[in-house]
Amino acid sequence: MNIDAEETQLLACIPRLRRYARALVGDRSAADDLVQDTLEKGWRKLSQWRRDSDMRAWLFGIMHNLHVDRVRRPRFTAVDLAEREDLLTTRAAQTDALDMRDLDAALRLLPQEQREVLLLIALEEMTYDEAAGVLGIPIGTVMSRLSRGREKLRAAMEGRIVAPPLKVVK
Amino acid sequence: MSPYPITEADIQAYVDGLLPAARRAEIDVYLANHPDEAARVAAYRAQNAALRSLFNPVLDEPVPGRLSVRPRASRHLRRLAAGFAIAIAGGAAGWTLRGTTQSGSELASLGGAAVQAGAHIDPLARQAAIAHVVYSPDVRRPVEIGAEQEDQLVAWLSKRIGAPIRPPKLGKLGYELIGGRLLPGNSGPVAQFMYHNVAGERLTLYVSTEQAQNHDTGFRFAQEGPVNVFYWIDGKFGYALSAGIDKGELARVSGAVYEQLEKPS
Image 1 (cartoon, rainbow over the protein chains, first blue to last red):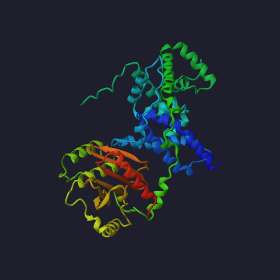
Image 2: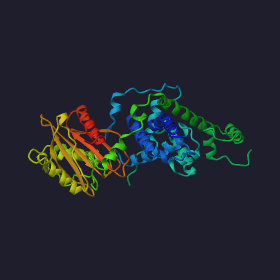
Image 3: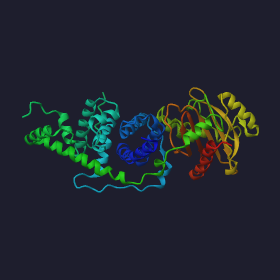
Image 4: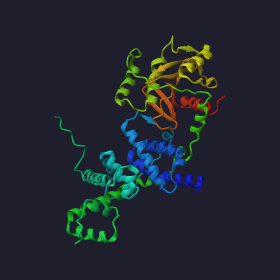
């Protein structure tokens, strides 16, 4: 495989990286920042990518690591320039079953690690093995996070959890 | 019934269509006899479908230009760092608020942000903004060595930092160098160059070499209180341009700084 083919492969992953980042982060501009940083790292390390491996999984792994770093250090309000002029957002069509806005809000209630697993599987349609590889965790952990994340999302969508429960002060 | 008990993992894999046909058939039977579990499976499948229909439209959005081009800047900056316009080694970013009380409410508001944000946040833009607010209002002594002694400034900062360092020329954009200073970082010096225009508006360029543990970024904008900051990180180098001036104007200047970094004169 030559360099051009690798570049093409990387570029082809961008829409999926953007979809996942949007679902993960919520905010469009912050999501694209995450994608941009992922791509910059990806371009830089493209020569280290093993050619027999899955480019998508490799890039998602890079994004996961960057995202974990970011979650650990909350950010100073930063806006990407390109985004300010481009406020055109594609809105999903409403489905009758679920209110999409509620779904997005409910998704935000999930702990970070459950949201990641759920999105890799539901949105990216990865196998549990692939998700475990991307996140660098055992498959059993993928399964338990998936199970808990789904149940929590279901509860939120059914209105059983409106807000995160209050903590009891000892 | 199957000799294997139905596990939670089976249920999840059933939802995602990841079970072999034989096992799937066994789960079908199980679900027919357990309506609660069937309802749960249906809810999870609905989640999958809803997540896709919520986020799949992103796949059809036009990809922003900044994402679809292979970045080249890093390479230029690195070559440059090897010996041209602004090249610093051995410095360190990091400005803490400890002991700085003289700069009034602007600084206080930045301090609030800093405290709120914690110790490891995107420090480059914040530190640059704080350094800007601390020094730029100083009428009498905004810099340690003035532009009239630029050779001395360059020699001194280069010596302190241990590598050649030179301020970009922004005269064509209406900004003249006032001078520069050394700032305390977490583990060494950081440089700040200050410029002004005929209206007296001041602009500072903050250069740090403490970014090695951070990942590279594209051109970014941050705003905190009255200070606008354009910044980017390349390898261990971090650059931040701060000013109270209008964002568009600052973008223009940032472009020029960036260009000089790419094409050293």
